Length: 229
Image (cartoon, rainbow, N blue to C red; front, top):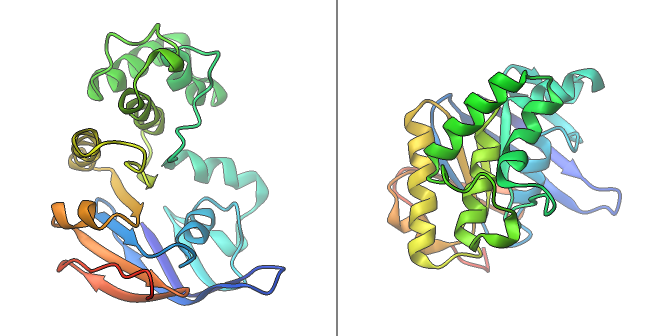
């Protein structure tokens, strides 16, 4: 669950990235967060993972109060949130299996647990025969699937996908969205952060639009993105 209440974020440079943002996302929802470049989308992601702290206001993420969270609690928070980055951020000298297993090893899972869970998520994303490959041996779409598998491996409450189809052709983009819908159907909250109008139009989902650090639209009727918003 995500709850922002009148959140502002002012950087040291004086840039007002967020100006009184309030929004609520329930467990199990599938939401698009849209807006032009510089609208505040990246700041919201960093606040959700406690990479940044708000200048004012209240943020709750999966039961954690961000503005008062202890440093020792941040790793626990982040285990409830799987993040998929546009540039994949795979470890080039590790196999697909080891890239996906990395997060489980950090939290001290047993070898048996790792094998069972990694095999399961690789099958879920259609990479059951790619475990021994290295990232450079995969297509862009396959690399994105590895990133999705990695985000799912610790069974997070929520997935945040930052421009997950930005580097892919339309067919691969559709396949990635189908995978995220499948994760959502299994109970995971999904937030897609994007500026791609076609992606928003293709799926009938809740759309939260942000511009100039403010929420300007929130509903199921879609939203037309305008770079001048």
